[in-house]
Amino acid sequence: MPPERPGYPLRLTIDAAALADNWRALDRLSGSASAAAAVKADGYGLGARRAVQLLWAAGCRTFYVAHWAEAAELLDLVPAESIAVLHGPMTVQDVIFAKATGVRPVINSLAQTSLWHKAGGGLCDLMVDTGINRLGLAMADLADPTIAALSIDTLHSHLASADDASRLNEVQRERWQAACRQVPHRRSALANSAGIALGEGYHGQLTRPGLALYGGVPCAALAPHIRQVVFPEAQLIQRRVLQAGDTVGYNATFTAPAPLEVGVVTLGYADGYLRCWSNLGTMRAGGAELAVLGRVSMDMTVIDLSAAPDLVEGDWVTLDYSLPDAAAKSGLSQYELLTSLGRRFQR
Ligand SMILES: *Cc1c(COP(=O)(O)O)cnc(C)c1O
Image 1 (tube, helix red, strand yellow):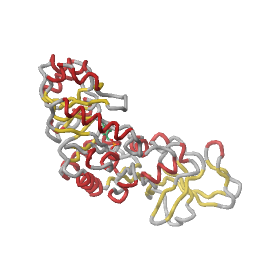
Image 2 (image 1 turned 90 degrees about the horizontal axis):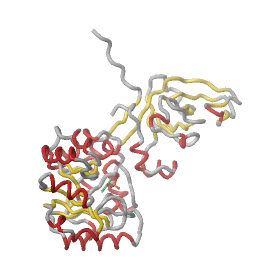
Image 3 (image 1 turned 30 degrees about the vertical axis):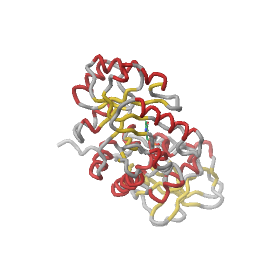
Image 4 (image 1 turned 135 degrees about the horizontal axis):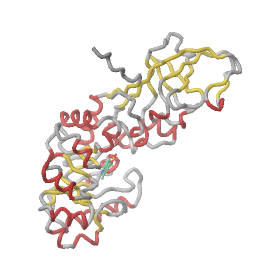
């Protein structure tokens, strides 16, 4: 018998009920529109397969990924028709895959339109650029006859500043409504998580939340409705005692003012716990708060164990990782905090 394959001493605990509740809250806040789910980037780092299974069980019926390869990883879990690929088709292989499986492309340009028509067309989504100037058909191209020949399920646009009280929101909404009047479609969609909070005029028939599903709070209005989903945990691999004047970690950025009990945790910047948390982050064991001491290294972080005298090697500690708080503290965005969590976390 081969020995059992070792697991990593890092885990990402997912609160499945919170994920489902967040989707239900966003669906409710979407009014007469239905909430879909953005599950690109491996479900914002949670694990797309698990997220899709939980969201489907909660009632979600439309999922957005960025890449065709991401769609392929979900095909055994949900009907292909419930998956759409935001980046659209770039190659003949992409359109062949779409036609063969039934995964919907989101068409973003006249070039993609032509690629789709050449493959025989069929139901697709259309993304219209109304001011983010990133991906999407230019408003001026809407009148192109090849657009009129598309069979469009969802007509999308995407807000640049939904999490701000920006005037651009209203400008984009008006352009999106003009596009909706011009191009026949079954459903329309504009709002990401923060866009949902902008109100009914932004909802169309479908909303596309991502961040808030996973516990991110992009604007104050969503705060009462969203619960933390992701709890990163790591194992304590050593306890040690520092003497007054001892320093911790690379470049000795922490000096013990007095004798101090500290611990080494198996987590570092290679796991997405970036160096900005040096002398800043906190972790928990039971109720005790354990401050990060010195620099975060690649695979290890040292914490103050003064408040946890009973913690022993092999015990687990939980990172303080409430997304809005962690973002305010670290300067990282809530999106980065989720998607940078590394592959060594067992999900
Ligand atoms: C990622 C993405 C979303 C989700 O945005 P959040 O801010 O995470 O809610 C919605 N729409 C498009 C087009 C996206 O690329």
